[in-house]
Amino acid sequence: MKEKIIEDYLRDQVKAMGGKAYKFVSPGNAGVPDRLVCLPAGKVLFVELKGTGKKSTPLQTKRQIELTMLDQKVFVVDSKERVDLLIAHCKELMAQ
Image (cartoon, rainbow, N blue to C red; front, side, top):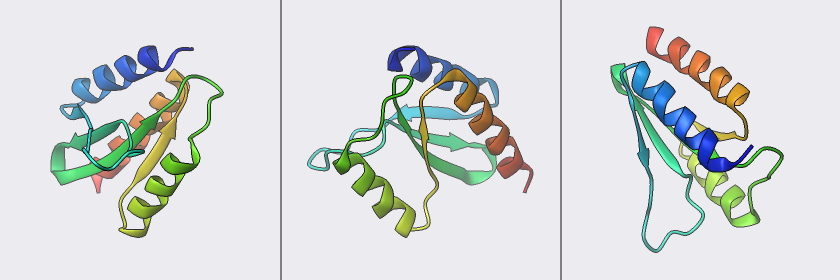
């Protein structure tokens, strides 16, 4: 499945739960995750989207590790099924 289809699905699912999935661009910082997901109750996470079966580049992996080291939640999603799992996790986060 193409990344764009998965990205649109993520955006729509986050919106349906009252959140925003902002396209994340950080000039001068290549490799940052594609989306910054802001959820009700102040929960925030980063999502790197990939076409089905695709992997993060070494630079993307480096950025994901940097964010994780800052106690940020970072997810790599490559299918609608993974989006569904992420949404389930988000609902758990919002309930905390």
